[in-house]
Image (cartoon, rainbow, N blue to C red):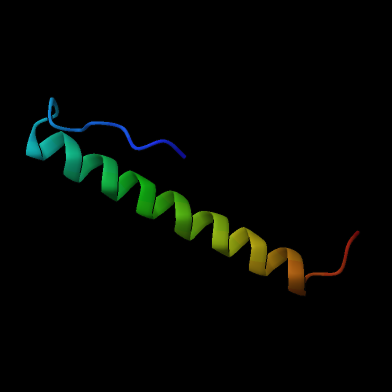
Length: 41
C-alpha cells in the first residue's frame, strides 16, 4: 500500500481515521475468528 501524505489533515481527522481503521481491524478479526470456529451452514 502506497504511503499517503497526511500532513494536510488536522490532528483530529488523523485520530478519527486511526480509530475507524482500528475498529475495522477488530471487526475483521472477529469475523475471521467466527468463520474459523463456526461450522459452515
